[in-house]
Image 1 (tube, rainbow, N blue to C red):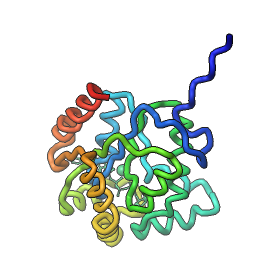
Image 2 (spheres, rainbow, N blue to C red; image 1 turned 30 degrees about the horizontal axis):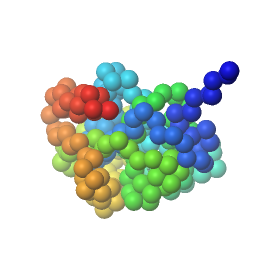
Image 3 (tube, helix red, strand yellow; image 1 turned 30 degrees about the vertical axis):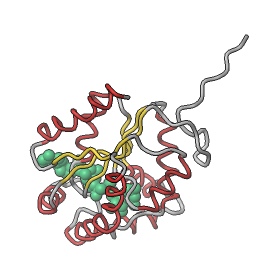
Length: 208
Ligand code: UP5
Ligand code: MG
C-alpha cells in the first residue's frame, strides 16, 4: 500500500496556512544591533535557514516589481512596508529553502505584521531572540557599515530608531508577556555576544 505523502514543512501556497515547521525564531533588535551578524553564526552551528525580511525587501525593490518603488521609498524613510508584501516574501522564501528551521530576522516589526503573520502563516514563533543595544552603539555601527544601504545615513537612522521604539518594541513586549523572549546584551564583541546567543539555542535544542 502506498504511503501517504508527508505534509510540507511550510505553506504550499503563501496564501494558505500550513503545518508549523520544526522551528521558527523571530530575531528582533534595533537597527544595527547585530541581528544579521549573529544569525550567520546560528546557521553555521544549529542548521537554521536565515531569512532577513529587510534583505528580501531590498531584493524585491531591485527586482523591478510593481510595488518596488513603494518599498524603496518606505525603506529610505525608515517606515514599515505593508505586511502583505513582507509576509508573502518570507513564506515564499521559507518554502523555497526546503529547510525546516528558520530564523526570521527583523520581523515582525509592528502589531499589523504580527497579526498578518499569524493569519497567513497560521502559527506563531517558538521564541524571540532579542538583541538589546543602545542607540549610540547602533549609530556608530550603521555609519561604519559602508554597504551602500539607502537607509544608513543619519537622517534615516533617526527615523529607524523612532519606528523601532514606537512600533517594534510593543511587539517585543507582547512576546515578553508570553514568556517567549530570550534577550541578549549586544554591545560586546561579536564572539562574546554569540556566546550568550548560543546558550539559548542549545537550551532550545534540548527541550524541543
Ligand atoms: N556589528 C555587528 N555586531 C557587532 C558587534 N557585536 N560589535 C561591533 N560591530 C558589530 O550589524 C550592523 C553592523 O555592525 C555591521 O557592520 C556589523 O559588522 C557590525 P548587522 O548584523 O548588520 O545588524 P542588523 O541588526 O542586522 O542591522 P540592520 O541594519 O540590518 O537592521 P534593521 O533592522 O535596521 O534593518 P533591516 O534590514 O531588518 O530592515 C531595513 C528596513 O526594511 C526597515 O527599516 C524597514 O523600512 C524595512 N522592513 C520592513 O518594512 N519590514 C520588515 O519586516 C523588515 C524590514
Ligand atoms: Mg540586518
